[in-house]
Picture (cartoon, rainbow over the protein chains, first blue to last red):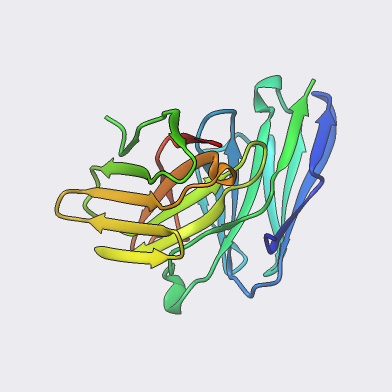
Length: 117
Length: 113
């Protein structure tokens, strides 16, 4: 079983709704990630948090707003989404070594399947 | 040209056969190489992780990295129907700000009983 837990597993929302996706890990990892995956495509990086600070934003539209309240939690706030934002949203975490250097492998959660009507 | 190339398949093999998967890449800065298995509508599951060149074996899985050729492989021995999934290669450069993986497009594998 994955040690990265995502909720909810499924979410349906209208274009005017505000919702949030949540992610939790208790492996002591200090880097956490949001990825977006469309059907039959590889995951696409959205955001990276390293030691609770946003370190990478892949030019994601502002209707997606990430938040890292502490080292174990990662949220993705959603507002005014478009139907084309429907996808599987994946959270992941990884160890980081000294000075924030990455140590390799990412561990993914099961994902939150989002449908925007 | 994509940074990481992977044949999309599908790759269909009979149960018990060896599954051979590979990826080529163009960025010589990549140092970490991973293989993920993804079942339909699930998150990717890390199968193998290799740093730099060489071979690594874990049960029925063997990962190989040839940095001189910019080529990585995954072999699955004694394949089972439960191995039917999409296999994604992924790689990253050392000391990225967080681990910014570059994925291949994934190869769909079907193991027939």
